[in-house]
Amino acid sequence: MDITKKYYTHPWLQELTTTVTSTHEKEGQQLVVLQETIFYPTGGGQPHDLGSLNGEPLVDVFEQDGVIYHVLTQPLTSEKVECVLDWKRRLDHMQQHTGQHLLSAIFEDEFGYKTESFHLGIEYSSIDITASNLTLTEQEQVEKRVNQLIFSNLPISAYTVTSTELDQIPVRKLPQIEGDLRIVEIQGIDYSPCSGTHLESTGQLNLLKIIRAEKYKGMTRVYFLAGSRALADYSHKHQLSSDLVVLLGVPHDELVFRVQSELEQKRELERKLQDLQGELVTFQAERIVADAEGLALFLDLPEATIEEAQHLTRAILNLGSYYVVINLGERLVLGHNLPTGLNLGRLIKEYGQPLGGRGGGSATNAQVYFAQPKALQEFHHFLESNLEEIHKNN
Ligand SMILES: [Zn+2]
Image (cartoon, protein in one colour):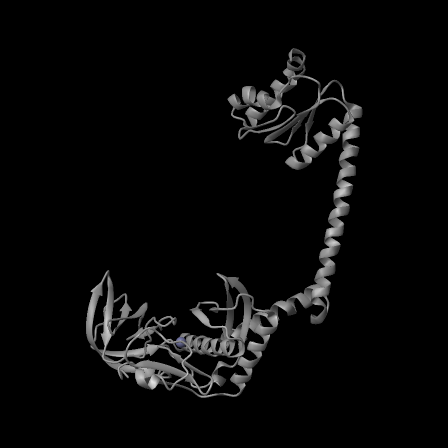
C-alpha cells in the first residue's frame, strides 16, 4: 500500500503537516503535489475531499498516473504545508459509501440482485440493482436487515491482496484489473474491491434508510440515505408532519385521513361552485338579452377572464340571435349566431390587424388583443358603427 496516501492508512486523520514536492500551473489554477496527503481524490464513485492548504481552500483533488493533485486558486507561499480536512464532508462520504457496500451486499444476499452502479450525490445516493420489479416487501426486508447489521457493529477493514489470494475471497464484484487489489471487508458479510474511504465499523453508519425506488433501464434505482443524512432527513420530515399537525389540528396518525377528506371536500365545493357559476352566467345573459336593443350587444367586463367572457357569450347566444362583443380592457371577445356570411375571424384580420390587433378565430367565435388601448377603442368604435351594416351586406 502507498504510505503517502494517509487517507488509506489513517482515514480518521484530519490534520497533517507535510511539504510540497512540486507545483504546476494549469489554466490559472495551482496544482500542488504533496509528500503525503489526507485528501481523497475523486474516484471509485466517491467524490474528492475538500479542506485547505495553509488556509487556502481546495477546489478539487484528483489523481492522474498515480500522482495526487491538490487544486488551489492561489499559489502557496511556503514549502511547508498545514493540511486541514473538511471532516464533515469526508465522514458523510464514508457513511454513504460504506452504506452502499452494506446495502448492495444485502440486496444480493437476500434476493440475488446485483449492484450495477453507484452514485454518491449531494442530497442522496443511489444504486442501480438488477431487479426488474422490486417489491416493497423486498425493500423493507433489506432495509431491516441492513439496520440489524448496523446494530451488530461489525468491524470493517481494508487490505490489499494479490490475484492468487483473491481466489480465496468471496468477492462481490470482480473488476477488470490486473495485479494487486484493495478489498474492503465488512466482516463476514461483504468483500468488495474498492478504492474509497470507509468507516471502521457498521455501527458508525447509525442508520440507513431507503428513500424510494424507481424503475430504471430494466433495473431498479434505489435511493438511500445513511448516517447524518438519514437523521437530517428524519428531522426534516418530522418538522414537516408536526407543522401539518398544527395546521390541520389533528394528531399525526390522522394526517393522511384528514388531508384526503379536505381534498374531497375541495373537489365537492369546486363542483358546486361550477354549477353556481353556470347559473349565474345564465342569469346575467337573461338580463342582458332583456335589455337588448338591436342585434349587436356591446358589453364592458374589465374584471372578467377570457373563459368567463366566452361562457357568457355562449349563454347569450343560447337565448337568441345576436352579435356579442365583450371588452375585457386589452382584449375583445366576439361571437355571433346570425344566419349571415359574416366571418369574425376574417373581420379581425381585415380591420383589427391593421390597427395592431393580434388574434383571430372562426366565423362565429373570435378574439383580438391590443397592446395599445387607443387601438382597441378604435376597433371597438369601428365595430359599433359598422357591425350591423357589414351584417346587412353579407
Ligand atoms: Zn466502494
